[in-house]
Length: 318
Image (cartoon, rainbow, N blue to C red; front, side):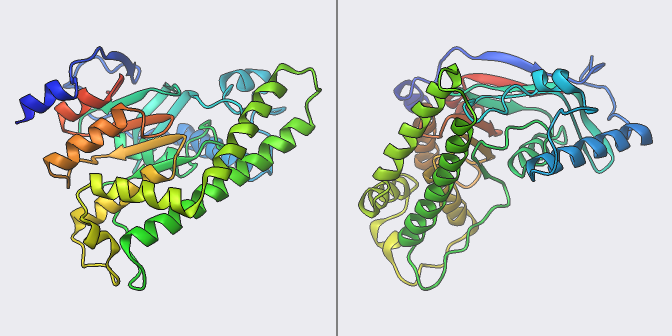
């Protein structure tokens, strides 16, 4: 059955590969790297503190004494007009273990990435840090949605699955768009009228206005119904009040639907097929391959055929 579906969804596609490598990682049998020296750990902590101050508006990232223009060049995707991700000199550690050192992470709008690596390489840690704003240099203006392995949404007893999905995602999407709208308007006020960036920001403002006007209850409900049906929910199950008791697998499907409905700039999926049946896997594959996952999609999965059907690029952590 899988072989028949492969031809239906055109699984065979060209896949480009980029490597995200640690210096000195020459062989697969290389032992786990030692914990960073105290001085290096302190430098990483100071970098993170500086980044958090920047995102809270307390300091300027890459200002005087922090690398100046050199840092500004490295973090060139901080403009709200930029929808790509470029983080250079990326370092990552977990529980005293160095996972990445002086690496580069580049994610391009419209691409879908398979993030590969051995267990313990730091794939989930990388996604979680980026999604939570704890990865220095990751553009803070980008809307990130993440579906983690342990993420299980609970539906209020006084609402249906469909009603909760419509109300929660519509509210979060409107809040995100209005926040971006305010940022863009403030940025435009600071630009000369003949600045080339002004036209880009104005175009994005027009897109936001159009999107806000389309956020009607009817359109949101129709999109949510289509999403839930694709994930295997029956019409009765999604509309029942109180909602039926859901297993961990069905709650994971609700989490996936919520992430997809939020129209993120960057979508992180950590083992999304673990609790899906064949129908759900093929539906999600077709949706993501058709651009339904947002601007940038990064997927961690042990399902090789799913990755072949979804990914346009590969990132290898080693």
